[in-house]
Length: 278
Ligand SMILES: [Zn+2]
Image (spheres, rainbow, N blue to C red):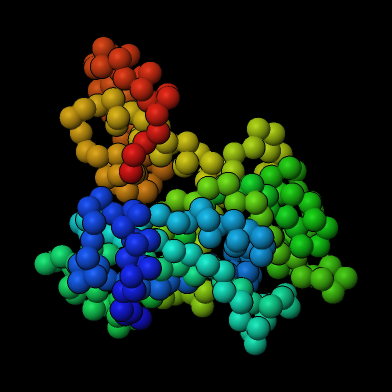
């Protein structure tokens, strides 16, 4: 998995690094982010989605095990490409394609063990997080975000397997290493695009929407409760919380933000116009 860093790679890496890095300072490795095969949720990315995700994942940060203690141990993607394996076919009979990435880590005194684990292939599986604009039924083409259909995932209709095709990626977020390679394919966390008139009744969809809203609230509120943790730190913590914990945390932050009303007002402008820097 370890690779010698070429001049071209170093140039790309330095496009993201804060200070120019030299060859001996970086550790470069490859990861398979996601593919076009049907996953454990009965969903797959379209080929076009993989191409678009390749662009969206450039520069994205990877974290390890969602462990706040290791939050300083991060890697960054500096190159991506879609790879076709002509000899391999997906469950639905397409030529297998996957989104590959090259990531780098800055070598430090404390990440030697982690680098060895990556080199040894222990931390090989990654999960990615992204927002998709469309989720289409493989049988009839209906978009789940626009009411969906009556076909059920995993079911067979006139010999056709029902699964959902994830299309039109809108954004990509962080990616993370998972300690135990539980799945055949890289684990994929798909966030859902917010649709104004979603008519579906999928409970997990609703819960994901609620969760996303709470996480956003917590992030926003923590910004107004200085001095506090960094946005990145809050974000990672929020991801570890249950929805109940998130609601409680939000309540506490709201209280504190109200006490800092002046600060809140002054910074509201900058928040609305700016974006969080992770
Ligand atoms: Zn359908």
